Length: 223
Image (cartoon, rainbow, N blue to C red; front, side, top):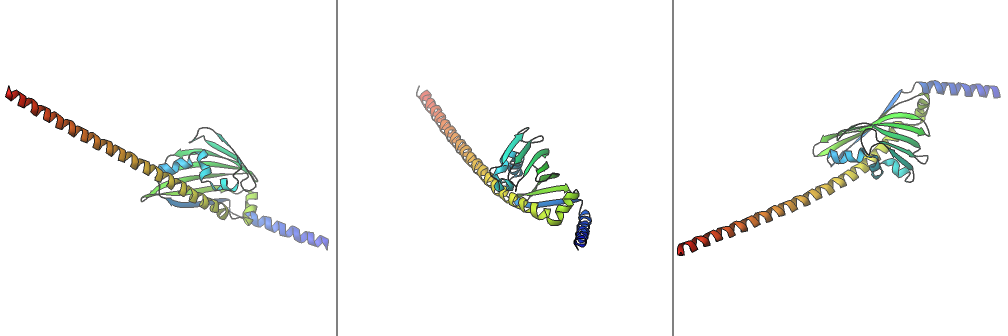
């Protein structure tokens, strides 16, 4: 009886492994949103890893995770490594292409709880008075990845994080854009006031000069 049970279990496991081997060789996850902010303002939040805590969905999953930064502050060669709880694991992200303010490509390396490499990045494009932002990730499934894909839907899992991240990015970028617009409006108002004062001062000076000239002519006539 026990032998029959082992045979049945072995058949089930073998069947499962065969089924897993037929799963997709790769995966693609993509989410988009529209942000009421200039592309340059949004890109500044993406190209600098030290700006990510303000909007990254993984920062909220482990606010205490350890982070290290290497390379330049932004652009190609900039990298960010993290180690946190079981929800964020351990990994590294590096900028491999930066075309401000329209495209950022990243190499994403997962170390724990599993090892994998994926290509991810952001694309920004004008959308009327707003900016369309697309966050995408592409990766390949090795055999273990195929096994995991039987139980996990990468699009649902990663897609949910992308949606949360884009929502937070939208709030941060729109707030920053609003602040910049207010500062620009203030600067324009100050410049306009200064120009008006300069024009008024010039008018007064011209009036004084005219009165002085007229007085001089009167004095000359009396002589």
